[in-house]
Length: 299
Image 1: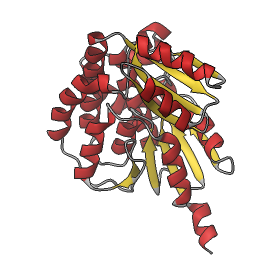
Image 2: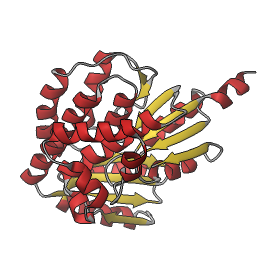
Image 3: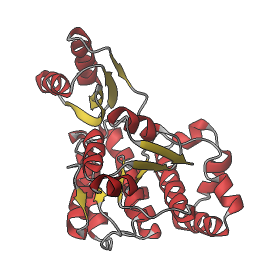
């Protein structure tokens, strides 16, 4: 009987930065009046027509931080509104996607969530410009090895995204990342290669952005979500607005514990995972973490 209850439990997950593509959200805008209304509201809040870039922009235009993060947030949240079967028992989002999850869970309004995401994007961009930094993907190495190597490298380099078993992203200064990649390959990692990103997200180098965003988060009204939201910093479910705020503030300088989130959701009964947002990155990761799961995507 307990297993039958588990089979019915549904989790919805929301992607982070990097999932964007030209044309994202256009079908929603054209086919759902409520979506068109929400997109236009987003244009007004941001002060520019982000929909023009989402629907017809180039890859380079979509890569701009002040576009990418709000675009993915808007797209994901509107999908949750237009989804006929959006009755989640639990929610989570990868990095930026956590803001989408909280808005979909009605813990924060679309308007306030969009303002926070825009502030987050701008704060992160400014932090990236202070110190040359980057991130790197490490494949085929266990977490402990990556953690040990990072701690042994002079300078700043830390685990940033625990994506799945044998897939971890590290973050830090360019010199420290380069040294860590060489050491990890020498220690047996299958691959360790820098990523084409503008800075060291989810590392101590984001401290200026964390401080800037903390004030905006503290001044934003949060409510109890409609269901538990599993947060990046501790991979645990939260419903307390106070705890949710604290975890969001910590998120920029803490690692994304995505593998642990999915494992905890599975342990707590999730058997079907639906990704709402552009791309299918999270579906692929979830299949690696819990191969028995059912994964669905809407974009």
